[in-house]
Image 1: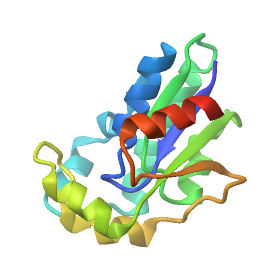
Image 2: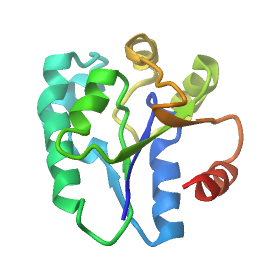
Image 3: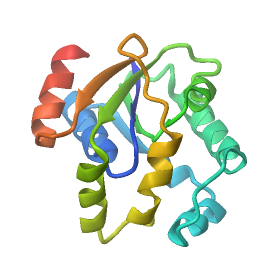
Length: 162
């Protein structure tokens, strides 16, 4: 069993890639958005960027969920922005076994994806704040893949690496 965090800014394809990886491996998919308190979702829906103090409870809940599943036989694929190193460190407390997969894309590509989404609470107007918060991991800290190709190709490449 392995724990994976598929990370990146909103609109990069985290949930799609994580869900496909879980399906391909018989693992479990978790979406970090499902763990946000309603107050956070309300702020984002209103176009208000989250601050660190908004994220700590959410990150702690995600860490608790990962720790509760760490001895499970299934691979776990968590789609989570994990934009800053401090957030990644907080997710990894008590685990030290997370593999981060960073989905990297240009602001223009991600903005176009976000503008075409109709069913998500995160508006495209927050893309600038996402990129401002992003501290890209190094290739020693994460598997890094560009997102300028179909999800199927990204997943195939990841399946070969993991």
